[in-house]
Image (cartoon, rainbow, N blue to C red; front, side):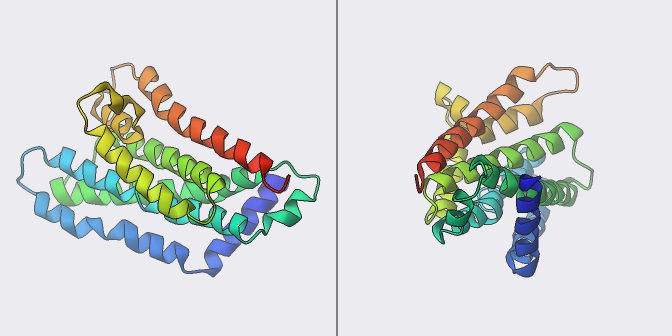
Length: 220
């Protein structure tokens, strides 16, 4: 129940500030630009790239900044003195904020795709955006646990690098979550994609484990 209580606190803090409204504004910004894609070749692919670019900002802004701010201000020092497992702090932030990131990312993608094509996007692309938004949220949390003061900025830089890495023809693109999101979005309903889902999940799990190990040593 402590995780739920911490998640409620994170949710209330979000509602009391302008962070949520700024995040909504960020999610809306790309929609008008999608209108210019009409009639272009590979319109859905270009629209999907815009949606992925949005993930360089939304998760770091909501998840990374919230966790980084709490750790930087040493508000967690009190928590460390309580019989509370440290992983629960990150878990609470993700439970409270990651769903918001997913909803905003998916909503923005649906609006972008419909604006560009005047049709609802395929379900596989919606699932890919949702999975990628969740993955980047976890990565942002892990990075913020490593470097609280620079967590949001580092997470943004990381995702921008991830986008570039995903465009490389070399096998290094396997280390990119956005690359795996593109692969999942291109799959048909009848194509097995379990391996792609595992690859998409593995990268944020690694970052989360690294962040938890670093968090475990804080204020030790």
